[in-house]
Image 1 (tube, rainbow, N blue to C red):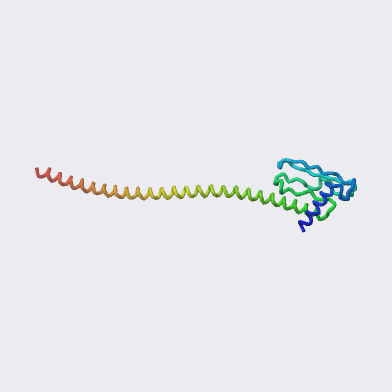
Image 2 (image 1 turned 60 degrees about the horizontal axis):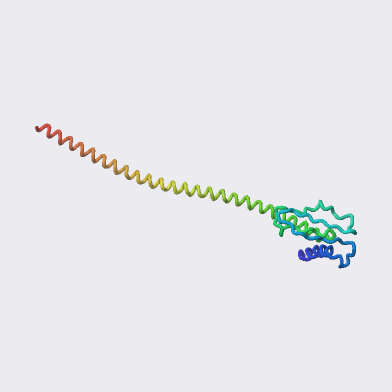
Length: 170
């Protein structure tokens, strides 16, 4: 159904391009020119025999500057209800696409923040583990030094006793 609608819309444009296909003097030629992808494009056309109930050009948003050129909605054939419906659907999809792109960008930013926090937490975890190992080494060294001190105190006490015995015997 979508292909059929697009085909009808393109046929409408082709009829405007080629007045030899039965349109006679009522059709205007559409000129084509290369336009940079970052420039907004507004396309308008009219038929001499167009009805007055054709919506004005400004009532249909034709430009989505944030979309890539190949994703831009094609202008509808105003004489075809189906073409107008397809155009409106394409505009809605383009708006949804923009919302999803914005949400993805926000989620990507949040992801970066969480990765940074995780990296910081990992660094702190490594630092804490290193500090715990250093603490264990220092505690063992402290225990060894206290043992050596107590042995030195005992040895000093024995030497004092021996010194006092020599003093008393002389």
